[in-house]
Amino acid sequence: MFQADYRRGTKDGDVLGVEPVVGAVQAKLLALAGKGTMLHQSHQVYLDVVFPGLPFLPRPPRWHAAEELNVKLKHFQVLVLDVVDVVISKLPRFNSSDRDDIKAMVERMKVDAAVLAERFEMAVDGFLMDARAVDLPRYLRNLNRVEREFLLVQETQVEFPDWLDVP
Image 1 (tube, rainbow, N blue to C red):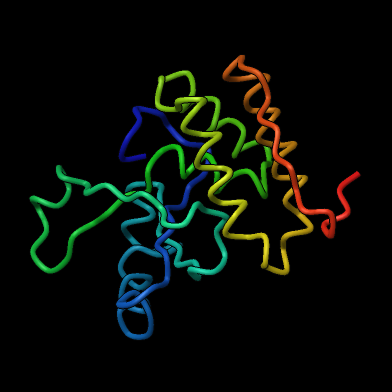
Image 2: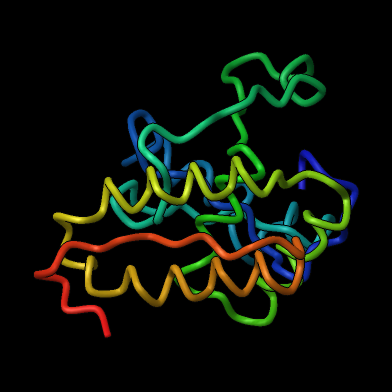
């Protein structure tokens, strides 16, 4: 939303729930810009706070300052997730809205295939010891679909450990 001129099908903007976006700060943000607020009604986009352990992201994620927005702010600064990392974060769910978002970012030349593959492998490395590691082959299939259908490049191959029992 901050990095591409695309009207998203998704109507929320996620805020990762790390310090200081917890407790009273989280409640205040949601009261100001959460679902059903005046800001949501006037801009048709609302904030949602997600817990930091939830997103499938490379470690560390890449952040960029939202410069145009930040010059208008007094009490905090907004950082936005790198477009390639956004694509990676959409691979687990990968519903039609996620695919539309990814396709739009690719069409606007915001996604470099080599960087996407590299960042995906970094995310895999960070999740191999996670309980969700069993889902990694599905995430790879979704990445391969993006590469094949949107980026028109050769599919990334990832070798998973034997214990993951990948077919």
